[in-house]
Amino acid sequence: METAEIRRRFLSHFENAGHTVVPSAPLLFDDPNLLFVNAGMVPFKPYFLGQETPPFDRATSVQKCVRTLDIEEVGKTTRHGTFFQMNGNFSFGDYFKEGAITLAWELITKSVDDGGLGFDPEKIWVTVLHTDTEARELWKKVAGLPDERIQNRGLLDNYWHMGVEGPGGPCSEIYVDRGPEYGPDGGPEADEDRFLEIWNLVFMQEEIANVTAKDQFDVIQPLPKQNIDTGMGLERVAYLLQGKENLYEIDEVFPVIERAAELTGRTYGADHTDDVRFRVVADHVRSSLMLIGDGVTPGNESRGYVLRRLLRRAVRSMRLLGYEDPALPQLLPVSMERMKASYPELETDFARISQIAYAEEEAFRQTLGKGTQIFDVAAGETKQSGGSVLSGSQAFQLHDTYGFPIDLTLEMAQEQGLSVDQEGFRSLMAEQRARAKADAKSKKGLHADTTVYRETIDAFGPTDWVAYTNLI
Ligand code: ATP
Ligand code: MG
Ligand code: MG
Ligand code: MG
Image (cartoon, rainbow, N blue to C red; front, top):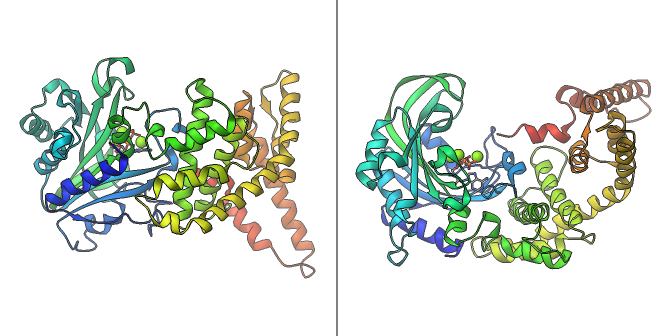
């Protein structure tokens, strides 16, 4: 079943059940706590927080999401994309647990001929919050699940809140057993690769306060109106229904891997390290396409830096696969062709999108051209002297003279089995800033005064990696 068809079935299932279909919000959403939309409920937050009155009781959407926190997982697990689409259904004070469980169960298990997704009910497992006996009983009643396939979890895994005073509630997650060839028995508690999480149902039922940690808070009182928020990973369902091994092999993503294989002359599926790189390429090319499409441009901080890092990782992965020519002009159009069915604006806007991506690759190629040799010499020297740590001054030189951001140096070092003296790097950066500050002071009046920029850097640190670790 094509990804676009799964999306269509999801929306029509919920539309038939009285939900208003709401188009995806852009990835850049006006939320001070987020770099990018990372879940389907984000655009509905004002309704859940009671700040605005929803114009509907029930809504459904397929929301574009970016989770940069998952970047290191890409290609290594079977289930994490930096960009993905979250199918969701939402109830604002309307149906609650029983409705959510019933609607989810129907869609998952109804036969394909009947408009459902056709999963074998025997392969479905769920988790519930250990205190949520109501949800457990409903899974037994509605779905006929035996107790063994309903696993209890604690607050850390199965309680949802926003980290602040406000709504909270238990959740219940739905998993599909991919089969014994993928791992041990024992349900999601035992193995999250064999048992693939596809859907999270959140039951917003109470008001919480004094939140000090994910699992530390006080429940104040039941919410006057209980809400439902669910998120189903479209790509995860697609990979199962398309009989693939991971979400990089689905119809919306795999053609980029195929093109990359042609270009590099290497075979996908022949070597684990290469395969991870192929998947990183396909994932990052798609995420970059979607981000630029929504108005992000590469830059040195915040959102722009995330995009820059995705583009650079895609380009570098192609290099590691042996392809040194400009790669994005070969790959980005392939990704656009696959995504335009659901996002037609990608095609009409492609001249702008591609120009931004290709210019970034060009600039990166120049950086790499200058710095790679120096890096190789530094890495070689370190190894030859029996060391395993690239010195702070080497990392600093790469940054200062060749424009290598520290995370590029870190990644390249890691590939060679080396680490980097980051402490040393940081103190050299700080020294340099102090020098520049003193210098600017002494030349005051001669040149433009850049103190204010320096002070910003001193206060907030260099943006290169801060942006990257500050994501929610
Ligand atoms: P996981 O434990 O696998 O990292 P999660 O618990 O972080 O997933 P949720 O926050 O519950 O995910 O998001 C709801 C659904 O969105 C998940 O059940 C999954 O199907 C999907 N999803 C989450 N993260 C990703 C991702 N990086 N790529 C693709 N789908 C995802
Ligand atoms: Mg996760
Ligand atoms: Mg999870
Ligand atoms: Mg989850």
